[in-house]
Image: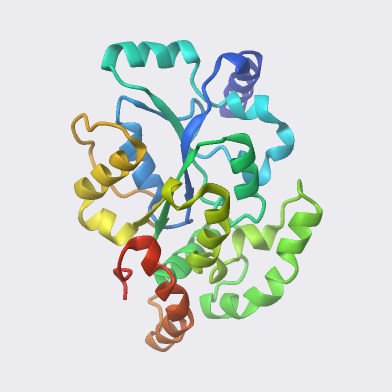
Length: 280
């Protein structure tokens, strides 16, 4: 029934795509860094318009072949946006959140080309915790078959070998391991941010330390609104979403080895965060 409703909604959306707004900003990642929690908080602001169907459209990574009308169909009608503007006296901004955009090698180029002027919000977290959380997440969803996190990390290089080259050579393909098994690679945030900077400029990318967001949600929420040029209108209910219990603790020896691995990449984050990452 849910699939039928979504299909009907998408068909109706395509038919009215020319009369729909496009997003002014995107939450592009990183996966397992609190993107859903920030999305839910922002979606409570009356001037911020979430997608009509669901949080993550995943157009610029795995559905780009469906075309711009399909993408636009996910967003509110311009007449609805006009009513919001009239009611609240400010310019409404549409947005979505797809955390694979940050890591996909073609997503940034596509976004820059199709959404000129769009702003990007990126959340980052302790990359060791992110990797451990991602493994539990993929295992629970059935996309990972290796129950040992340590062994999955050992397999990563082989699994991802040639993945970016494959995706560039086959721009509408999906690489399973690139999407679901990049435990360490996704945590090398500075590499991904450096790829986006020439496309968007530093001023259109906001990087948020998710540990700080969860510790001081109101202050970070205000910073995000300021970056977007949207006035505060009260505060939402701040909650954590998509938490997942760990099957077992992370061995301290493995944690330290991974912290050492990420040290140079975390150092490169300083210029994006304006200081040391909280986990350092």
